[in-house]
Length: 79
Image 1 (spheres, rainbow, N blue to C red):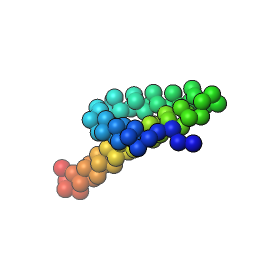
Image 2: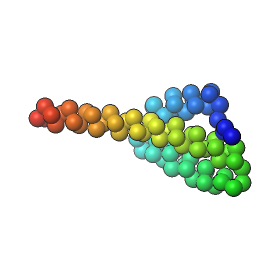
Image 3: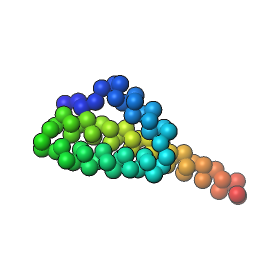
């Protein structure tokens, strides 16, 4: 059961790239709450919010990875 379309994923990925870190974290938490609220009631919407959750979480993971790499590079140069 898929909840989201390719268009949805593209839209979410584009928005995730421009959100502030705090906003991104808020959206992730909101998606998790919506997904959990739909569990057992509406599997299509549950999957939709799960898809949204994972899309925004992926952007957070990418940012954290970039920050870790940036920190590592600074530390290895003695800055």
